[in-house]
Image 1: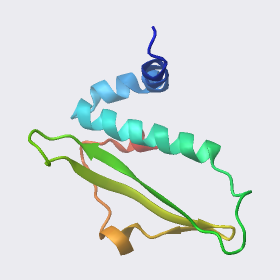
Image 2 (image 1 turned 90 degrees about the vertical axis):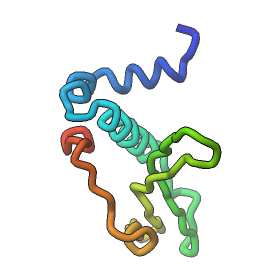
Image 3 (image 1 turned 135 degrees about the vertical axis):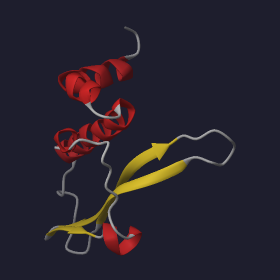
Image 4 (image 1 turned 60 degrees about the horizontal axis):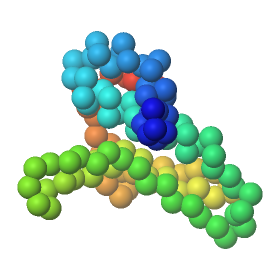
Length: 111
């Protein structure tokens, strides 16, 4: 009750609990859904009003994978975009190669 951040997470996930529980791998589905929720939140607060013709905003996002052992954590990139007043440019594959697919993350959870 006193952890407002966790409360916000729980309320954001509530409509998706059943789909996450029914997925082949609930932990993976949960992580991908949280990424999607955060991505949507970021989009809702982004503004280009600060930009000039020469401005570029880089958006990089993904999933942190915590592993046992020192220095073993990993980052799974899922998004890399450049934004200007003219629009968005997806540069993910140019930077990271082919976008990863995960059969444990149901498409309905990524939408």
